[in-house]
Length: 178
Image 1 (cartoon, rainbow, N blue to C red):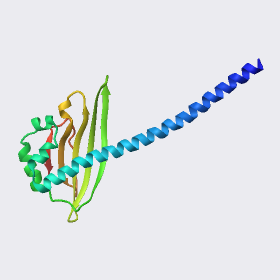
Image 2: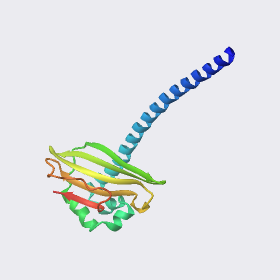
Image 3: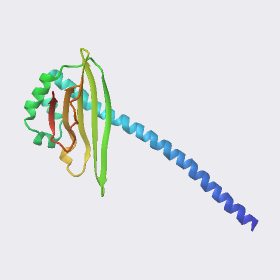
Image 4: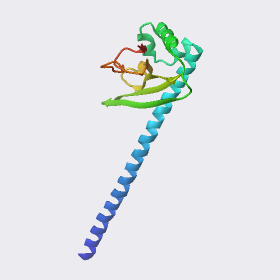
């Protein structure tokens, strides 16, 4: 009986140790995953932003349009005109920008979506302004929405009262907010 008790206790202790070590490893791996995912989101957004800046500086409407999803191209009101308005408004920037990335994601019985909101802070001649990109990375319900959904830009001295950035449920396109 003593031999069986020792085996049982040894087995329980081993299971607890394995559980504790695995739990710590999983938590560490989860943290590392989230850091990598966040970095990957920033890198993906920066690729779009760098392409946008290059197209704006060249005043290349077609290159800006290539960044948009099929859905946004088909459902934006006067996209060419809005891109021209953005090009006229865009003051350039002093070579650096800060970005804050947030996401929205979900799944409904295996049908998922992943939206990336990239909020850029830029300055030109000590004048701050902001650009918000809404990018759909996954959209199982409407795959044509995958890609750049909207570009919003405004001076950031002071936000209007009750201001709210547009989201993926709003109309797609380019919005210069004055």
